[in-house]
Image (tube, rainbow, N blue to C red; front, side, top):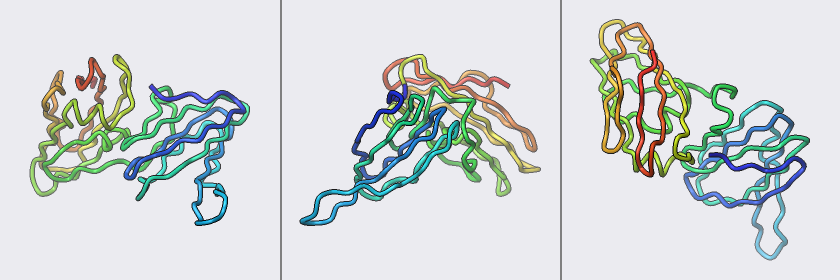
Amino acid sequence: MSNRLPANGLIELTVAAADRIAVWSRAPVKVYQRLGVPNFPATFSLLQAVAANTEYRSAAFATGAVLRIEAGAADVFYAAGVTAVITENIGRRAQPAPGTLNATGTLTALLMATGIVTSTTGAGAVVATLDTGTVMDAALDMDIDESFEWAVINTGGANAFTVTAAATHTLEGSGVVALTSSAVFRTRKTAANTFVTSRLG
């Protein structure tokens, strides 16, 4: 579950190296980053002015950073982590660039969190192994019984894209996405370090 900042509120938080931050509100929001200059008081520089009803997801921070979020006339939802997702806004968020997995490998939490994963499957069939439940839990700030939906689009004309299960991350239904077709999945946290991904269509 995402964190909530009341309307017109202000909060400072520290994010670790390689983490991102996501912010969403029905009103404009400002996100600042603290600048550290030796022997001078800390100052904050505007990192992003976020428009109403628009989800902002930062790039990963190379080093730890101190951020300040200033809410406008509506509550702000925010999350920080390797994969920052505003779960309250699933289905009503800006669509970042789709993730891509064109060769056999791990279908990471970060890829799924983009909402769309594409694959050309041009060099051969692709086997996409879901992140383990432990990795998912570390990457996503989710409560038990929270879920999110994502899709796979196989743009290739010759090979299949197949989603497979991992340790403590179960797959329900077929994981096969045939050539030139797509499929929708829902990933749900069922317990600590435990996830189930279900084929919806």
